[in-house]
Figure 1 (cartoon, chains in turn cyan, orange):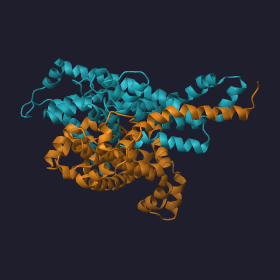
Figure 2 (figure 1 turned 135 degrees about the vertical axis):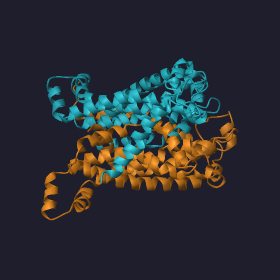
Figure 3 (figure 1 turned 180 degrees about the vertical axis):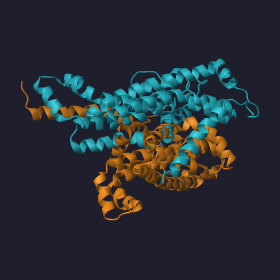
Figure 4 (figure 1 turned 120 degrees about the horizontal axis):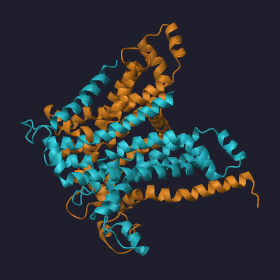
Length: 274
Length: 283
């Protein structure tokens, strides 16, 4: 009964992974074993360090905003009466449900500098038009904003489920003790949600760090490699430039962060079960 | 002034609705922008006059006609639908049996299997697409849509198994025992007891498998370059984006059309999806 799953996990996840570790130690033509040379060369590339730094910056910034905005949204929705809450929760989930590659195309057009709405609005309010996707700083902002748009609903769903599980009696008790709204949040809501926040942040870190669609559609890594993430850079080198071993080496850099996040999630879940 | 409790509650609801507005603008603006663009004429899209936020001249269906009849959109749609349905069926078959075995049959290592399933569902496509390139090439399936048939389950099966384990574990053992006393076999127990009781979980898992496969972009982009073999995501991305200026209408219309099936299905079954997602993540 379990055999298909076993074959799938071992044959299509574990085996390709192990094999990709071996692949990283071959030369471009995959004819010669070169040891760690691909890693050493990457180590010497400025571009690689650019991608390295950007991957972390992208992930940390996006996850921080998603977690904060998602929490605020969940608190807002939790205040609404049942019917309104259902409707607006549903509407808020559209960005999460829509295929990301397709919605990124929409964002691409939103960020288009001359014909698009966002610069028009900026100018109407007395600002200046920004070169959204052609300037390194604004291009990074654009990719992060798109990611926040996509991922905030996920946090909202998790938090809303968490808020529902906090017993009403705790709030009543706090109210009797004279706790004000902010104090009730600080001493009841937040501590009750903290484990859930930690798990959700870890999940999101994995997904955000390994993101491919947004950067690929919006900037293709440009201008001059400044918005690349490990996933898109690996695609660029491995598939487009045809250097599979080096591409595999880049993709492998995803693994440590994923491993650490997975470890914390598992530990948290185990703790929850006790 | 002392306000009554219900007044204060009313106030809070009203403030919450106000606070919701910026979120809704943020969430819905790109979609609105895509929608109006797809109905604008090319002249209007490229014009710098007037207000771009509304359709000023007569709306047009030209872009949609172009997408449907002058591109391979319908082929990609058919390919997506075919691949996704088969993948969903495979996923559900594998996941149901695996989750059942892990929760109810005690065998060597069954506890660790759960952890293994969980870890594989955290593996993102970006980690494995390079070795898969070799695997797909070895099988002679480069440029063939059917390669997705064995790639997508690596993304869907672990998560679906994981949420089904959650739903199955919640079924009380007393139910198994009652079924056993009545002479049910393992298979009967699965079909007559587990599947009906865990129906919400099955719906959630099906939705997930469907949504993930429909949205996958990296795998088709990496392995399929022939237009007639493409699915919606990479088809729209690689062929509707052309060098000239006048593709925005088609691109936006195509992206919206391709998203409709997912958004509609999820809208109807949102509650199942939400409970499946939260249970799968927070266990």
